[in-house]
Length: 369
Image (tube, rainbow, N blue to C red; front, side, top):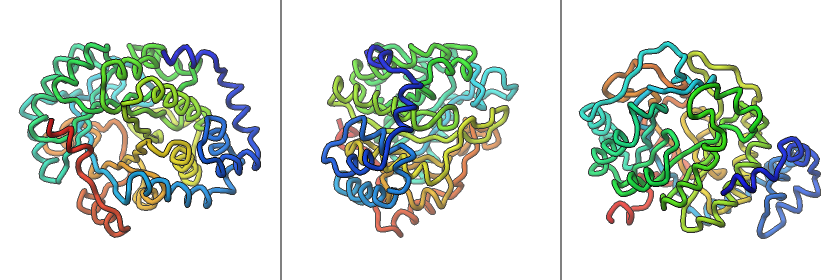
């Protein structure tokens, strides 16, 4: 289990070692053919800031070599905002007095019809964490309804047991996103005060269960704004390294969600600038040529316009972060406010203007099996 390796590290010592990296360490990391976890530390350190242009050029070359000039498009499909957790950064938190909504089967298909008309073949199903309302049976039914209409179905829901993931995979589940939010174990409880999500170790073990269940792709990430983003991303990289060694047939993706405004949310403890986020994205690409890097509509138009040339391979478009937000109930409460509000057609046009191709499917061969 990754927890065994994780427990050998100390947050404060890791943070100190990152901030102690020098220009020599950065240059060594850039010149190495194969980078290790110490190189990643150097690339995300303050010492790497003067090398951002060099990092961006290298990241661009590596991304095109592995992925070509393509950008994959996906849409989040929010099924429910019901949640039993109290998390002080999320609009769906149990203690947030909002109108709760869970889509029925008919409503799920209404949302699906809208997304199909936009051209999407890849949907990410999102719910709060409410086992009785949106548990395995609900997700199984949702996947069964949507499988005939989409080539790829991913989920971002409550962590499940290994056998439950296998059940959903049998129905056509392709990928699972599960964010640790922060790897700072002592402070984790400050953000997750009630509910199953407050169990740090259970959440940490989730990617192991996904790997054992044979899920095709696993998405990891942290919520940038809770704790030091450099240290959190070191632990994310450590986690990916472990998973790639133990579940080498699985594909992996990284997301970079920044804490965004929403009803009842805390203010970010740590702020990452656009320049620092570019550094982080480039560092990930230079560290791991194979990994998919995803940027959501949390980010601005200008930022997303440029980041596809710097290492990002997957972006959302025309997103709604509320259940029924596309066609059923557009005014229901959002999980967070989006920043890039362009239509799908406008995002596609932007991608093509930059000489890239918008890709609607992930792995067509999987869709045909």
